[in-house]
Amino acid sequence: MTQEEIKTILPHRDNMLLLDSLEQDGEYACGRLKITGDEWFLQGHFPGFPVVPGVILCEILAQSACILIPKIDSADQIPLYTGLDKVRFKSPVYPGDEFTTRCRLTRSKHPFYFGEGEGYVEDRLCVKASFSFAITEKSICFQKS
Image 1 (cartoon, helix red, strand yellow):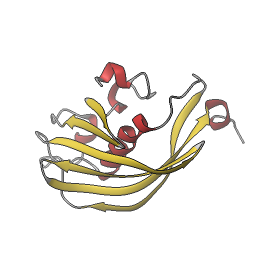
Image 2 (cartoon, one colour):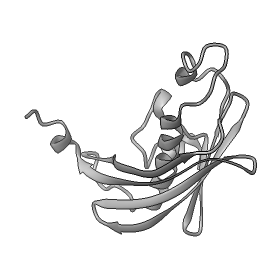
Image 3 (cartoon, helix red, strand yellow):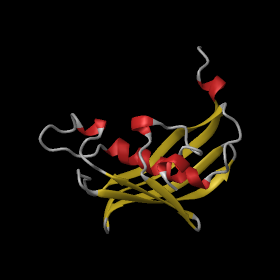
Image 4 (cartoon, rainbow, N blue to C red):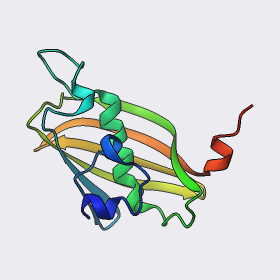
């Protein structure tokens, strides 16, 4: 899938859509993002030594996994992270790297989905994590308490 096709399943736009391409390979989602060095998250992380922040790597994993859930039927629904577990950062990701993901769902009980994923630069493992997210009504998310 191209970025335009990814936009049909993810609500992310502009600088928060963190995938150049996405493919499903059996039970796995495989995403790709070329780190150019111009990304907003590298501007202050760290001056003179840019490193992709770990939370961004985790976001890329979650965005990759969204291809594995059933299509969201309503414009009023949105996928939201509900948890991150067993996150391990193994190696940094730098400008010029092509970051690839390999994620799969481990279980689901709509509206909750549980997955695990790994992110690589070439054959070098950079991050691995278990995560969960839920498909939620936007109106519920934005109610004031």
